[in-house]
Image (cartoon, rainbow, N blue to C red):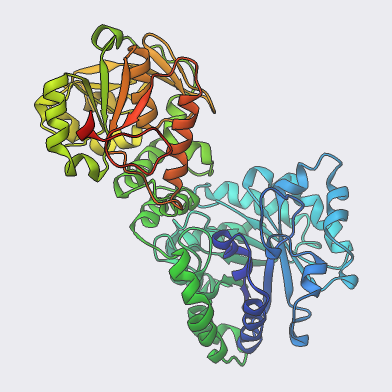
Amino acid sequence: MTNLLDCTLRDGGYYNNWDFTPQLISDYLNAMQSLNVDYIEMGFRSLNNNGFKGGCAYSTDHFLNSLSIPLELKDKIGVMVNASEIINYDKGMEAVLGKLFLPESESVVSLVRIACHVYEFEQVLPAVGWLKKQGYKVGVNLMQVADRDLEEITRLASLANKYSSSIDVLYFADSMGSLNPSQTRKIISALKLGWSGEIGIHTHDNMGQALENSICAAEAGVAWIDGTVTGMGRGAGNAKIEYLAIELEPYRRRQQNITKLLEIIRTRFKPLQEQYGWGSNPYYYLAGKYAIHPSYIQEMINDSRYNEEDILNVIEHLKGEGGKKFSIDTLDAARHFYIGESCGSWYPQKQIKGKEVLILGAGPGVKKYHQAIEAYIQNNKPYVIALNTQQNIKESLIDVRAACHPVRLLADCQDYLKKPQPLVTPASVLPLDLRQELKSKTLLDFGLSVQPNAFSFGQTHCILPAPVVIAYALAIASSGQASRILLAGFDGYAADDPRRHETDSIFQVYQATDSHVPILAITPTLYDIPAASIYGL
């Protein structure tokens, strides 16, 4: 018989920081009771407390006891703990387990699952014996097995089999959402060669195959299947519990009523889905295809600084660089490229010294006031730097273009080739494939290194707090010893847009440096910088 486990509050918490309201949890538990699921994973069990997270990030016994858990679910409550937290605790494995778990007889929890990567698997196995002695049913979830050869999977299963008296279920997770039914069957067969106990599967829906893979697993004898309400889960999400309940009914042989589930989908989870936007899309599909961690896609979709070209080019970069392990530092592709010293070879002083520099941003103010801006350029001859591919001023009036973020460079490469101006960029440290794309373009190599809260200018290079093009342009003007810097087209973002804070911070750090050049916005701006009118200059 197949066990159906719902892990909405655990896997879905990646979208709302595990901060579910008590009323939603109550309605959800009632729906799970009516659905007659076998286990409900209420969240993580953890000691890590960095930044605010809701109660389901910790699922303490105190928190769980505060909830209205129906009596019929008392022996169906589970939590998950990450292997990394167990094996890396400085006082030892038993010490951290003792902090995390009471004996099962004193807890509402009856099932504990340990999530581990392949490289953590052997180290964490002794923890299952400790948990079993405390009276818990224990599962071990092997993550990211899709790219492992079948012999290694069998070897890992054989290791687990030595603990078969303590492990109730050995799970494998399609962490990248990249498996198809054929691959799923092969992994199950490989596990069965080494493992004699029950097998579970946790699918992700990057490529739209979570449900099909789950059904295939049930047909192959897998005894535990995971799902979440509307598929709510990290990245593209999981197999939908509402579909699993229907499709797996022949394997479960349990009475179930989906009415309450459909009601909470309409009243509770659809509004959440509209707010957070989980579910498969072409970006998650590509991530699944190239085994890229779905958190990269989730982070970019939820960050207004990334547009369609940015996301596609990050995927292209991670496809080559390897994106199986999520890192926010890796996501910031430019930080990856600009670590270390970058000296450059172009001297801005030769063209800028003593001149005004006019920096043209991408805001609508350039287009709206283009006639006044063009007249000022023709009459006063400032050195004009256009950011990225801004094109609302006559090309003949622009001296150079500046660009420094590799993702934007990749996205706009063909546009730069069509522009007549030289391109100022940290050319010598750009990826080889990007340099090849730009080989027919005149590049002025102004070096760039990234260090938090740093802003300094050398003759041929700069150190910036972030690889943002306005910071780069300010550095070019300062290195060139401009007399002052005029800014047009820096209208600014809304106060709640993260780009507003980022750009304001750049202006603040810049103006605090001893060698900064006076700046003046000459078209309307929301940024906290000095401003005047182009018409009064």
